[in-house]
Length: 203
Image (tube, rainbow, N blue to C red):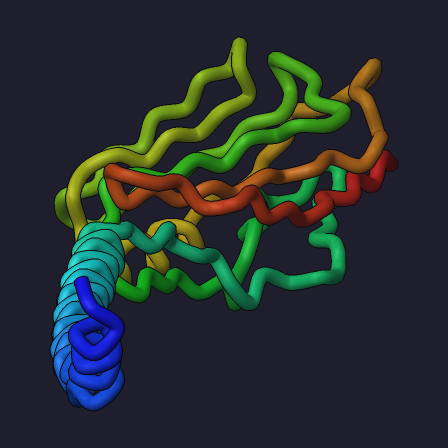
């Protein structure tokens, strides 16, 4: 190659315009667009997933709330002891107790137990005239009066107020204070025990 030809070739190379820069810019623009698209897709997916999770959680909570049973309550039992006097008539174990159940209108049972200082053959609990639908059973060996049968709350309240304590005590009877424990049942849950003292006066 002659010196003249070499100079012409170098001149042509130097004067050729650069075209890669524009193409590179186009590639970057497309890449950014794709990135934005992926970001939007991920955001939408996460949002949908969170929404579904919250919905399921709320549904489970509502279901549990609907099926939960509320135990009955015995309220307004006297805080002062009842007193039975030797040789006197039987006495009521309560005249103020009230029966409550926030999700039921009836009970299936109740018990009253002499849990302290019980003396078999002397102490007893009795419900002479139970309301319709309620049966009363006294067990001397276990010191337990059991009320059973489906009946309205008001009838169980009346039944508890109608229970009498008696003692056939004479010489040798135990004069210690008895404890009476009350429990209600709605057929699913039982109430917490509520107690009242029964003082015994020996003469």
